[in-house]
Length: 277
Image (cartoon, rainbow, N blue to C red; front, side, top):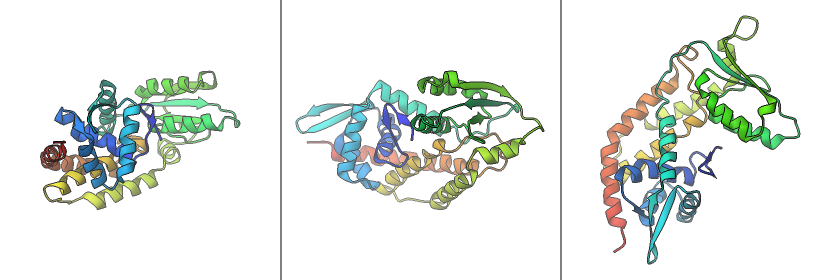
């Protein structure tokens, strides 16, 4: 699970759903929002009220939002750091529909971690997986996106592993595994296919009614989609032709566009209905 703004966020959790609401509803509306408005949506998608309140408090502690108290009520505004966080996340989430061109080069990391440093190993696995790196054999990490070297550099530096790391770019040869074999070993594509298939079966052809149904279904869809940057390495078409993820991305973009106006119209009503006084 990655750390988002200093707070560990698990996809589908209350904190993840809060980020979805902030980015998908609050930020575009361009105005502060009351706790009661956030609770309307969070409880509507199945989060218990106490858990939702805790998520809001932790989001504030992490610097995503800042509150202004009015009597017993609190009105929240997204901070500049929160805006940047949402912008960075959205760029990664909505880039999954693109099938990048590939010049045949891999960025390869050889990282040696002693068995005694299991915590560091776990952190490295999580951080490099989030950055889209695969792990075909022990100690070897690679990605067909050499431009992600800056992300790798930050991860290695943050974990104090620079002296234990070799990095280089290059193409595969027939001495060892083929590109197709590397892909199969480095990433759990079968599990990813199952996740995409479930998303397609759940939402393809969905037609929620106006009001809360379209608002809540919209939030649920976006929240579900936000799981995929954690697990989809966004491999180029040359390595992964006819990828189900690109079909799922097209469906997501279509439904999000179809539902956006109605969802935001209902959100505006919710803000008015739940405002104190």
